[in-house]
Amino acid sequence: MPNPYIDNAERWLSLSEIDYLTQFVKSWIPFNAWYMNMYPTLRRDREIIEEIKSNSNLFRDRLLALLNGQDNDSLIFKGHLAKLHKKLESNYLPNADNRVSFTSVTIETNPETVKTLNYRRWTYKVELIRSPQGNNINSLVTNSNQTTQYTFSQRKFDLTGIINHLNSNSNLTDVQCRCLLETYEKINPKKPTNLISSNRRGIEAGDIILIEDTEKLVKGIIEIIYKLRNILFHGELIPTKENKKVYEPAFYMLNTLIQSLK
Image 1 (cartoon, rainbow, N blue to C red):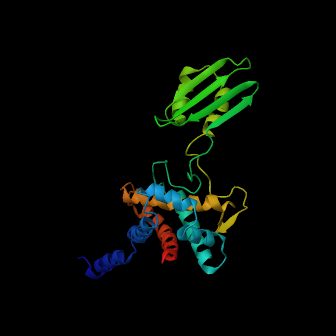
Image 2 (spheres, rainbow, N blue to C red):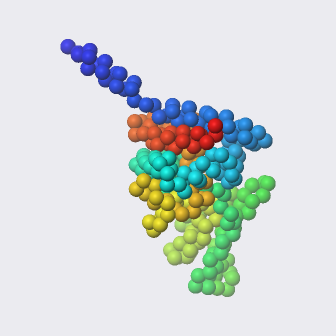
Image 3 (tube, one colour):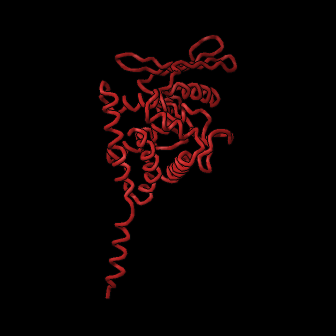
């Protein structure tokens, strides 16, 4: 015979758990209202986020102060940041750029459009050409006599595409292919940045070390929060128990930041 007290207790226990997905949405709404009022000439969310990331405003300035601060609010905020990093590393949250992660986040468009490598008298050149009609990425390999040994043109950055083309349409050696691909990756328009320090020098956040470049950090953290918003609002998130836990530190971070908008 079922025990109604135990059944009721379990139901009430589940209801007592905080739904951080909903809390995150509730925190985003006032942020959304603020930035739509703050930037009335910008219509798209992405345009506004890029503006917030790049120039002084209440939201960005508060984030910068928390990263640089050592007061109680700053330490708590950076503790949530460290927790979010760990949750994202243990839970694969997909987005248009493959996954959400502090170790690989696109913070801005890569300014590099031309890269050339000279190695053993061979030249490896990759150029991104932007135009109103569309983009072209041209890859060229010439030997010591300046004779073309390989050429390939693409409409967009596609590492898998050029690897497949090299494998089936070139006589380049493994070393030569590697030289071209290393050059190619340097003009990636969405070249990712790792926000976690590789040498233990930087900004302490809980038990992790962030890079020293606060400009990149601010842009990267705002971008991550925005990506979490997108996969939630667009229905990409699989609402598993573990995925929901990612939004706990994200909510506390966002909620702290929007207090500056009052």
